[in-house]
Length: 142
Image (cartoon, rainbow, N blue to C red; front, side, top):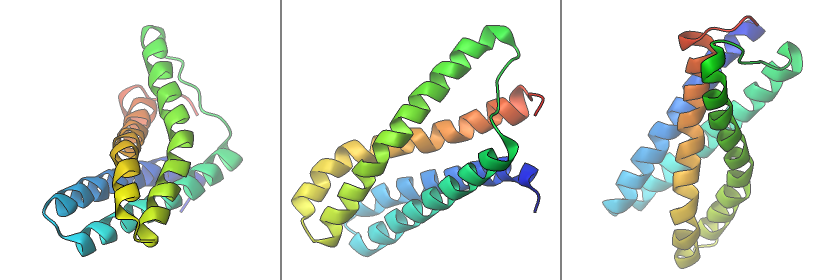
């Protein structure tokens, strides 16, 4: 694998995280706590692996810039800004939700998960969208 392969790897990891999040929600609504737990742990692992790959890519490849089309740049930057802020914010939320679940404090887990899940889902989906915008829809010179 080459460093230039990491953006697609990152998009796949974000996609997998979103799938696990959706399945986790479905399973808990059906009362299947074990499947829910397994999906949420899988979402955590794929998100963590994404972070490692993302940091490695930007360490070696440097920053990426969205330049063209110029008319779309403000929209892209808005998506990127919200994605980045929420990606940072979701980390303590996820850790708190996992901590409550691990300690079997399910009432507290439920309260924090109601906020954590949509933020985590938004971050996962916008991560894929950012990849598509940078590398597929409006390929930039890297």
